[in-house]
Image (cartoon, rainbow, N blue to C red; front, side, top):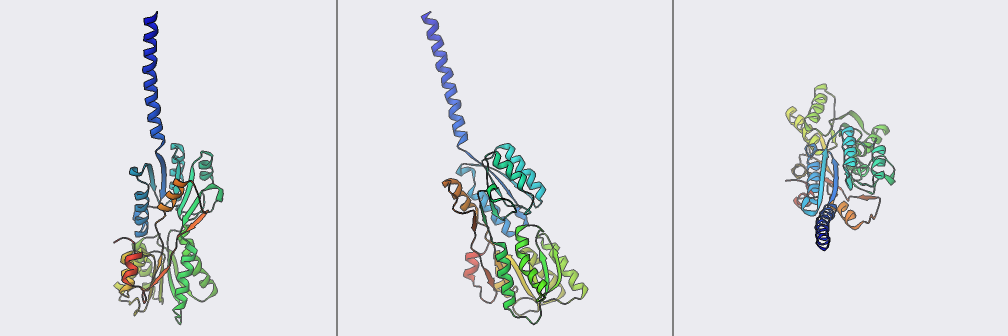
Length: 320
């Protein structure tokens, strides 16, 4: 009987050892922070490439994060990806939405599941209680700053080719609004207002069509650097001068280094800053468990070709 009891005790110890090992493994796994990142694809623009790189650098496996990412310019695809992340049981969802509307149901599901949501880069139209904080640019301020600069040029007439970004995105809405006010007031003429969905080639086609129509214009307001570059290619092919000493004012946004170099050379006139670095701010809130504000606004400004310096390019320019 004593021998049997000894054997049973030994078996219980072994079982306890294995159970303890399993518990330790589970505890180790639970220390891993699961993050789902939904963003626009890095190919969208130089800004987006820098933004994606920033997210990947901050939320890395080496720092204890298990990250799943999804990239799309389509809101419905992003919504489906968010739903899958909720099903997969991530701890956090970081979201840069393709469009401002349509997120209520998914974010309510995330909240019910105990998943914390942080917005970055762009705001969306939803209740503040459905996300922890938004680390974003003030897109409306970017538009206001750019249009204020344009008005300060005191042109005798403003005939504007307006090339918009992806319609319905926070960036497009903000950068469009200030210019729309001028069109409505009659202080500027809308030669054309059309989306190129952030695409350089599409922007080139828009400007080519205006050139071929023979309609006069003296301003190109492109809502990102890539589209401004496409617009300038169309001007160059048609032999139309642009920049500080040219016939057409060229304006872009995002402050890629190559674009700021165009300002420094006098080929472009204005570039609006849009900071892509939000990951570190979000990580600090996750680590501390403290959210200082429902909205954290990135500090940004605009650059004029007549005053920009190489030091500005080195400090504020994105990419190489």
